[in-house]
Image 1 (tube, chains in turn orange, purple):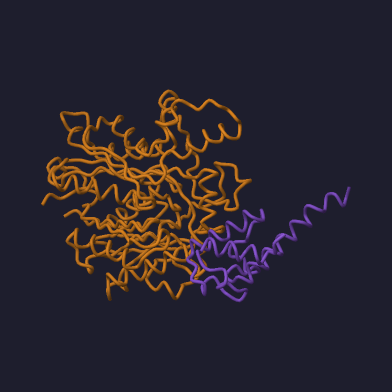
Image 2 (image 1 turned 180 degrees about the vertical axis):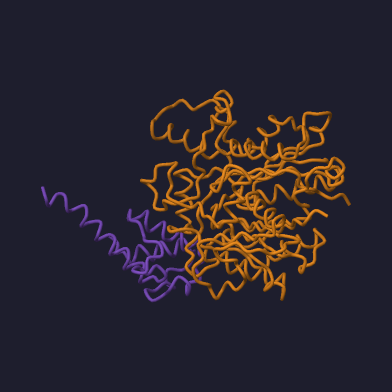
Amino acid sequence: MRRVAITGMGAICALGHDAAATWTAMREGRSAIGPIRNIPTDLLNVKIAAEVHGFDPLAHFDSKRLVLLDRVSQFALIAAREAVAQSGLDFRAGARGERTACIIGTGIGGENTHNEQARRFYEDKNPRVHPLTIVRLMANAPACQITMEHGLTGPSFAVVSACASANHAMAQAFEMVRSGKVDFALTGGAEACITVTTVKAWEAVRVTADDTCRPFCKQRRGMVLGEGAGVFVFEEFEHARARGATVLAEFAGAGMSADAGDIVLPSETGAARALSAALADAGLDANDVDYVNAHGTGTPANDPTESRAIRRVFGAHADALCVSSTKSMHGHALGAAGAIELIAAIGALREGIIPPTANFIDADPECDLDYVPNVAREKSVRAVLSNSFAFGGLNAVVAISRAT
Amino acid sequence: MRSVQETIFTIISKEAGIDPGKISLNSTLKDLEIQSLDAVQIIFEIEDHYKITMPDRDPNFDTESVRGLVEAVERLVSEKQTATAAPSAQG
């Protein structure tokens, strides 16, 4: 069977505007959660998030182009540019674009556009809606924009599964490259969900914290919204080798499952089935894995359930695993979460440094794994699993291993 | 006007799909086998009905039991009435 190499990565999130800055912050255990500054907070009860700050869209796109781009597409394009540049591939050369898929996850799509046009319409009573509203807000816009910028003409679409969108998208791209349907893929996730109405909607579910995100610890009070994008270049392994590309990691496998249970409550067995399927798909033994980047939202329900699922799958090896939630630093970027977290997984694999779970105070007896509290740890890492478990019980776990 | 207790019993019964006769002041939402999402909807309907904001995880408010909900609503409604009455009293 063909193998799949990751030969480029790009990211933008609250921790940094590129993958290197994002990884450095993760390694240092720096949390980017803070008071919301990009939107008015007078109507909000939850006034914290992990926002992208210091970001000037005009530094990346000319004004003619920008009018077509919701913030979510801007993030996706910036991450894709970085990934493509790192890969050293020119997708317009030869027929390469035809052999390339573009599969980008998003939970909500162009929410800033939707929110702003609705506000003008209902609040300002302005009957004129911007003619580019639809092309900006559609959930497939990030994927389309990337294909147009890089000349990708292979199978391209968006994947939507709330908080697991990026992992589901990458699992699909991996399958396509592995099966030979394509030779390359640009894949990942993007989200720009910090608008007044989305934050209000999350408040109403009563799962968001008002202090900060403290996954797995006793004082945790819920999740904190984040935003950003992560995009990767997947490439058939032998092709990458033959051209002397730097292989950041091997994308080894993916496992997916549905709980078919509750619309919000997580399921231990559903999560465990996705974890086991990822190991099997990657041909990994539980003992081969040294780090699990957890879904770790910091909600009362997720963290103990996820911990039990990990213990169920890893058995005695669960006590030797490092498990951390980098959402404590970059927030929960919903449909981009799995992609931003793959930056953490690749960093751990390449540098032998486990990014910590920040903001950790006291252990919770219901969460009994090694969560690498507050300070990164040096550890040789052979393989990593990265978890995403969405509302609606849709689970996707991806596995990466060292490129050998 | 219906009492707070009566209104809350009706909301719980409707949102959780349970017989109002099964609800008592001494029940907890857990006893009534009300799932978390139903509980959140119950609190939303109460807030929307009385135009109040129920506290989230405030140790001074018990939102786990029916009695706690009734007492919390009575307290918040009376605080709201005092607040709206205050300006005219000054005038």
